[in-house]
Length: 498
Image (tube, rainbow, N blue to C red; front, side):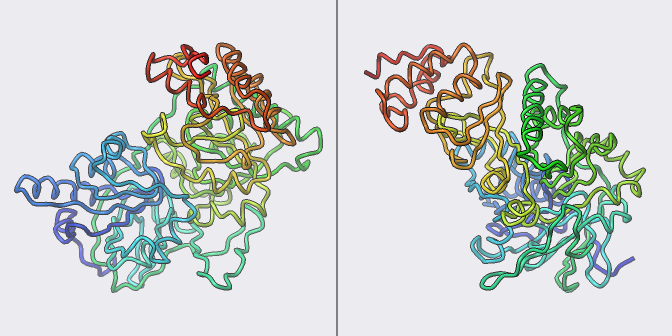
């Protein structure tokens, strides 16, 4: 037992003032604070009913769960949010202009907090499975930016979640690099290297209170593999197998980073089943169900990540057999999992998902029709720009074929063509290495675009009349405009732009 004050979540919420910034643990719903944010949301509703203003700035490692982003958004209690989100209510608030959201590369979030770029952090609310009187905090199923939040916050509230076992101590490698100038290298040379401490150590005097909780992470479930996601996965696996046979990937293979979601699950599943892809390591942000399945299949030796973001039944299974995973899993801060220095050094193969890709290879990861944000850039650029091999995947169409994900020009730019070596859809693979803009356009159209859109895109290229980059400013967003007007990109009429 420790001697920190034991308060209810409601008692903690009463101490948080309008306009203050609260940093929450969590990277996806894994390890996210749960009971205190719900209490803050209830306090906001009470104050709003009295006509009083109450909104807080919200920081986290990445997205969180419904009890955090969802509850606060429903209570109209979010003044600003960074660096990433995925909650439908919060997304609605952001797109309606009610909540200020600023997107950030996830590797930069902790250092931006340390540098003071985002202002003071008044509170850190951190989920833990154990805390000692000496201020040693054992985190739960994620690390995210929690070490930095703890060190920079004026006051810390610990959500002691009894669902997560105290024996998680040892699964975390907490390390913060020095600030410039003369920063030392981060001494990781293999995904399994440990360089930090198993706990986050803080001044015990900063711990304002402990709040008891007992509940699993609010992780969602992934959809079953579809013919499209299965084919995308097969195309990725076959491409990597081919690179291995050509000697362009070392025989022992390289660490893999994969995004999150159904397409990512399809990719990892296909890699696990491919007979020519050897056992490999993961050095990634999110360890999801597919990664655990690869470990069980002995296709993945070791997984280093920022969060253990798995479905509740699988998390219970892991906790029931924790010792067998102790030598196979490690959780780190996002500043380390996403470090460009380490991505380049380790030679990571990066596989991420796009919303749309243009004929030059530029990627939009975040916005629909250029103005409505979906989630955020996340860590994709941290990996893509520095990877040994950077791959972006997406289905070739959306909305029952009414939207082509291959377009003349992306309506919002997140990754430039210079950071992308391959685009892969269920239609095929566009290897962009060593190709001029005209050749890139032809390769992407022929190999990745849906057959319904190939001639449409070739006709667009013809509008440029033969230039270094086949773009025509007056028509570049013609397909997007056609969707806005007709709800179907196939109705574009290039003649309107002559």
